[in-house]
Length: 101
Image 1 (cartoon, rainbow, N blue to C red):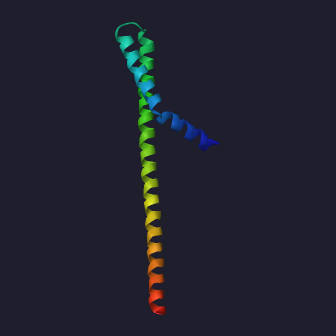
Image 2: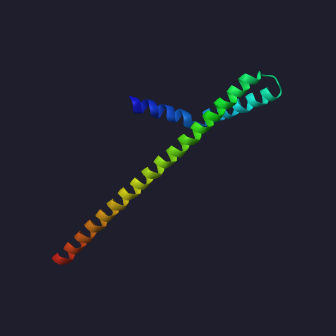
Image 3: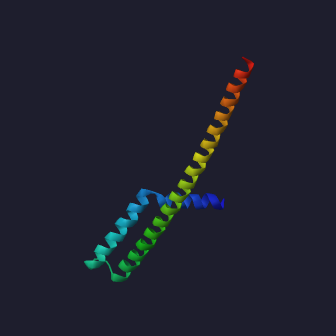
């Protein structure tokens, strides 16, 4: 259950729409604070929240890319091993065919 929750939160954090909403909200609050449309306290809090969200998004993307690279390497190693086994099986069958003729 814990892994499922972490996976769900990671998927949400990596979603491009979430990233665009966070960046738009941060930019909007900054502009609204600059033009004195929004109280400065709220603008600062919104900017800090946007900054934290951006850091979280960056970290989750780095972790995801690292996991994907490791998975790709494992898949490549598995594929290479399967190819070696197939080549060895083919060579053995070819040798047995020569021996019987």
